[in-house]
Length: 239
Picture 1: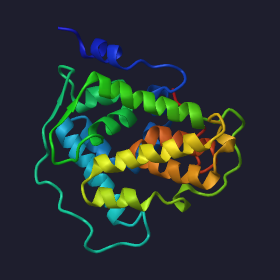
Picture 2: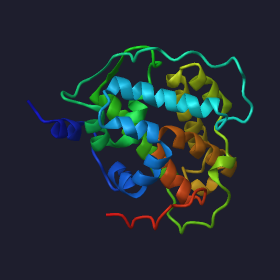
Picture 3: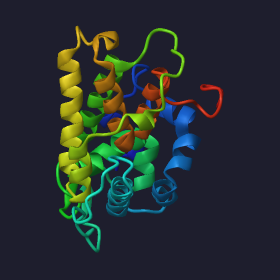
């Protein structure tokens, strides 16, 4: 039987264009501090449990008004009492093993896309590849090649979309991910040959706020590159 490393290596290849391991090195402690509920469960949780924890974490952000300042009192639906089954093509694939191989950003998209949290989910090699390739496209389109600008304003001022908040409160995580992809599609189509400087800044910053909810490593890095967040250390200094 092939090892987990060999199987994942066949499914997801890493390049310098978008490197989850580099982002984990630079932003791991920062993201872990911001999302303690998620990281406290990664090492021991099953994929099904991690999936439910991710949905619960995002629901709490939504219901707390961090996504939208105005709250509806009756728009939240009860969370499923037990996690739905999650299967994968990769033998011995635990939450911690996949996190170490493909990173939290890819793993989160794989767990939350396609079907709502109360339905069983199967993660295939192709789905991991698809999510990684989408993040690579996001990176190619938005990564800054020039010097980092001075801080513009904190990313908290650019609120994620209401449609995402509504989807999360209704346990429709798959709809939220679909909307996230649509937002990027609109940005990409509206740009001139995908150049970041041709993209409407308010829409770009709002997309980054949305992206960071689901993909905190790449979201934090891109937000840093656009001056929307400050790194709590000299970025790149950790080994």
